[in-house]
Image (cartoon, rainbow, N blue to C red):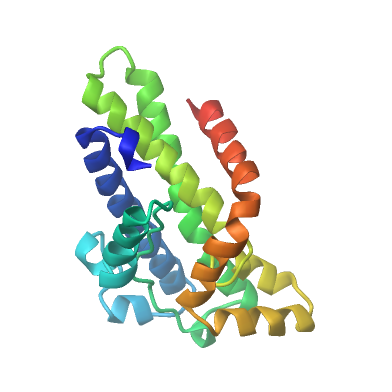
Length: 208
């Protein structure tokens, strides 16, 4: 992936990912706060300070290891803790919290794309490069996190609508924590990567 990218591309990529993940996690916490759970606020996670969202393993070490082995890098921020027992609307409240993160990424992609379209004649190369890559990254985060596989955000909506036997199965998957995401990325995602990528590109082209 990074072999075809310039140094400026790589820097923009990491800065964009860090900004996007920080806003994504802060939005989870803010919506949870609005719905009655103050865990994120009490732990200082209602912030745009990116240092609060960096996890040594999932944000730094894991993507580096994947790049070394020639695999697609996968990043994850330090998740905002939510106590669903405090939320209004029960499972639907948790679904709203889950959807808030991807929606924040979609809005960031729209903002970047609009600035690009409106200011395209006034942008220098680096500014245009940043807006394009920032929009692409946020579209990717939006689509990827909507996949209904625990513990991805899309699973929160599925959980609110699913029958009990499906909920029990999802709980078992989520109990493995980050291991379930690794299994998903290594064994399942490769079969859906092409249609996911096509959706991302169509949406990005529409915005731009």
